[in-house]
Length: 89
Image (tube, rainbow, N blue to C red; front, side):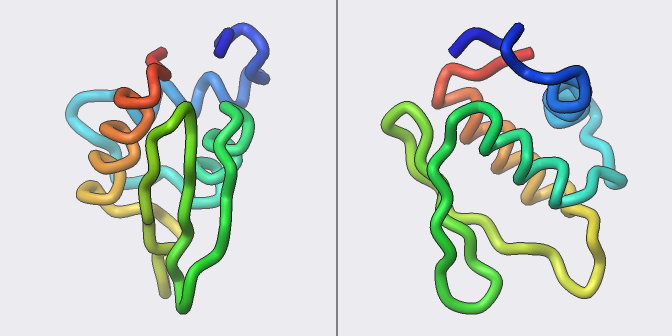
């Protein structure tokens, strides 16, 4: 995956995902859009579950609710998922 194909918004989200310490203000919709832009396949599970597959790596995340922002633990999981799939800023 060539990261230069990502829009500037998606690149900015990718940088935010890999920021250390993790941010607490990243909207889930931005993370989801980044995963799709990177080529991840998405399927909806029951409730708030979202399944993603990217470069042979699979992960399940939960849409945050009632807040719209992803929590730090889930953000670390997204970071690990992207890293295992070969996606880095």
